[in-house]
Each structure stands twice: as C-alpha cells, then as structure tokens.
Image (spheres, rainbow, N blue to C red):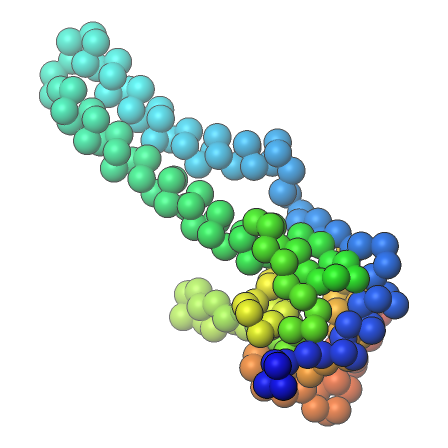
Length: 196
C-alpha cells in the first residue's frame, strides 16, 4: 500500500469546491443535433442508393442487385466509421465533476486521489501549406488509471477552465511543466482577449 499514489490535496479541494456537482455540457450534443448530423451524414449515400434501386426497378441499363448492394456497403461504410470513431472518442470525455471524482460520458469514474496532473493540450493543424496552432485547445486530466478529456466546445468554458486550473496539482502545457513565466504569458493573453 505504500507505493500507491494518493493525492490528498486534490481530494480536499474537490470536497470544498464540488459539493454541488458540475456538469460539462457539450455544445451541439443534444438528441436533435445528433440526429441532424446522422441525417446529413447518410443523406447523400442513401440518395445515390435510392437512385440505383430506381434504375433497377424501371429497367434502366447497368444496374444489377449485386452492384447495388456492393455500392451500398461502400457508400455507407464511411458514415458508420465516423459514428464509431465518435463513440470511441466520446467515452473519454468528461460528463461531470463531483466531490468523489470525474465521471466520463460512457460511465467510467476517475477518483480525485489518483489525479497526477492537468495538461493543456494545443491543436496542430496544417491547411494550404500553412501550419496553425490553437493553444490551450482542450484539457486532459491524467489519472493513475487513465485520462479524461474536457473538449473545447462546451458551455461555460471559461468558468470550467478556471475551476480546473484551481486544482492543487501540476499543470502542464503540451506535456511540459508550466512555469511562472508561462502563467504570466497566459494571463496576459486572456486579458488581451477579454479587452478585445
């Protein structure tokens, strides 16, 4: 038991600050928004498949049932892959924070006593030969038994970021330990954004 990691400071912080649980609500994550995404994702492939079926039933040349089924599978496969990839990614997203720990979207619970550090992760993108970095894009809470992610597109983002940053634990920026200089630069950036 002596080798087990236990972060008492974080447990105390959670008991003081999270007595009413804090829900992390994703933007555009309601049932109707997801349904709209699924309809848009499958509308073009289903229209093409319906066109092939119409050609076959009206006696149009070049359409046979084997080709229609093969084409259907090929056209629908990317949509299903996107949905499965989204479900896999969503299982690491934070649903709520309470005095006991962090609850993920798929029911997994991370205990505060196992929290090692918080990592502010930047997003790197390259488009048209130009690299772009979005700093502090998402938060990763790294525990002894896994990682929980707070994505950027959430309601009350600034308040939740401030709450997470108040946790008495190591804070990293893209895996590098944050220093006082980094804190001052981040504070200056936030002040500039708030004025503009």
